[in-house]
Amino acid sequence: MTRGLFISFEGIDGAGKSSHVQALAEAFRAQGRAVTLTREPGGTPLAEKLRALALNEPMDALTEALVMFAARRDHLLQVIEPALARGDVVLCDRFTDATFAYQGGGRGFDWSVLSQLERWVQATHHAALREPDLTLLFELDPAIAAQRLAGARVPDKFESQPVEFFTRVAAGYGRRAAADPARFGRIDGDQPRDAVWQDVLRCVRERGWLS
Image (cartoon, rainbow, N blue to C red; front, side):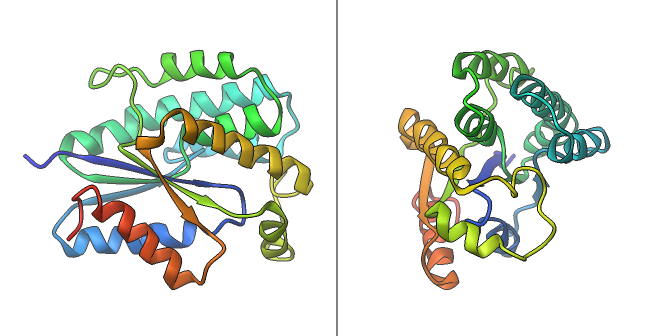
């Protein structure tokens, strides 16, 4: 049976990651792979309810992190693990790196507490610590990202944060990538869309997953 693949898409709001999720799904499907598209926070009925709370209700950083990890646990058990067991390619718009970046970097919350929650929540019957096989990290100057977001839609409580917040979020992503460089494909988001897409393809092809 074909082994399942787990690929996450990460980056600060406005970095352009989400526009490439569907394109990568189509590339895998063109080679005969079944694809599960999902997102965090969210991905299940329960996790979507928790998403609405996390993105819109005021709460402290620990409460925020607990809500994110509660949603993640349900998402893992109900969607990600079954899809991987079937041999699907799972493409997830954000995963745990976002919690470290936003709550750890942006909010300044204790990194060690997040690491403990990660170990508890992401242990499953199939993996001692379920992590993506590849994380595509879209990197962009926070000031440019803010310009892209301006007027695009009604912002949630994270999107409405000042540029300084996203500078800390970007640093949080950088810390995660530095700790596990083999898992990350770093994408320059300050390029034309076609050039960004070619970088996405390169990262996936380097691992032998697409021809």
